[in-house]
Length: 312
Image (cartoon, one colour):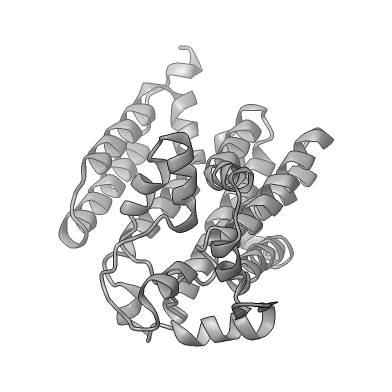
């Protein structure tokens, strides 16, 4: 029989059924089932059953699936129910460390400065950069996978998940308001505040699209500014592009996008400079802990070897 069409084993099928059932049950009870949940569940099951090739792809994409589920499940217990929300303290720290002295407005945070001083060219580039923050790393990972660089792919995918979990922990340890919140509402804590496009609205207006408006309308918790995971993802992609068989021009593009996202995070009013630094630091910590800590633990290294062997 052609190995491309081998049926899943009973153990694999049971694992799939139990995993999907647990995910759907918890989501239904505590978050609420949405059409995308149903669609994703059907897609996973279909890919798992079609062939061994698509089954390996499903298993390879598990780190990204767990990332998405973890993000969704943060709705169960909002971070502001765990710790107090920092609105003014972060603002004052940003102004103290990175404030810009102006002749007429006094000392401004970089976000306030860019709110007053922006231009169409930067607005356009900011929108392009922010559209790259998730798609480019995921496309890079898929590129590694389909280029048969699956050992590097798996390390990249697991570090991507690991860094997100570090960042999510940061959201709960230190709930914090983004800069646009302070500019719009001041220092008062207003729970259930809807998401806001902030400076990215200028890109939507310029292009006649509503990309960022639709994206940020889905944001159920605006008090998750620290750390800036926008600033983390391209750090991971750039690092593993250095480890993979990639062209130097691709690495250069990754570096350009990474710096552009850092700038946009501040320029658009979605993050302070402090948030961006902490986000990039999360990526560095995640890489170092994974590569020079976890990978030196024999049991963990054997798990990675087995995982890599399965998806090859």
